[in-house]
Image 1: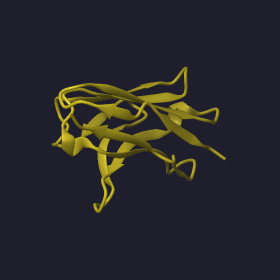
Image 2: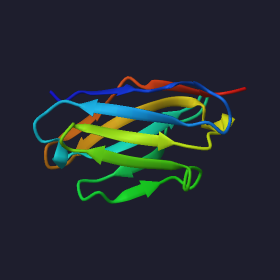
Image 3: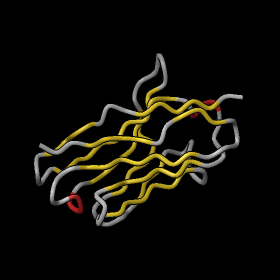
Image 4: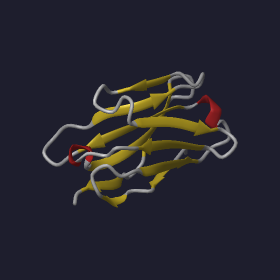
Amino acid sequence: QVQVVESGGGLVQPGGSLRLSCAASGRVFSMYNMAWYRQAPGKQRELVASININNWRNYDDSVKGRFTISRDNAKNTVYLQMNSLKPEDSAVYYCNAKSDRLSLDTWGRGTLVTVSS
């Protein structure tokens, strides 16, 4: 069974940067569509950024120009580089691996990002 594990969260000041990582198990990572979601207290989980098997990227409007998603298929890892962080970016960030072809839809346990002075 494919598993994904997030890391890299923490406390950062407004305007700072963090890089989240998501390591996935499995032999065919290159076939997984990967995405980052976030959920703030009292709010619904929302899509932050996604990258598909062709490296096509998609971003929520709130993070465009500040966040960058990338993947390294050799390392079975997807990254989320977050710059110019704002307090409203504070949330638990979740990694998702999905593939209709492989009947895959797997979530990690999340990593907490807190943006505060």
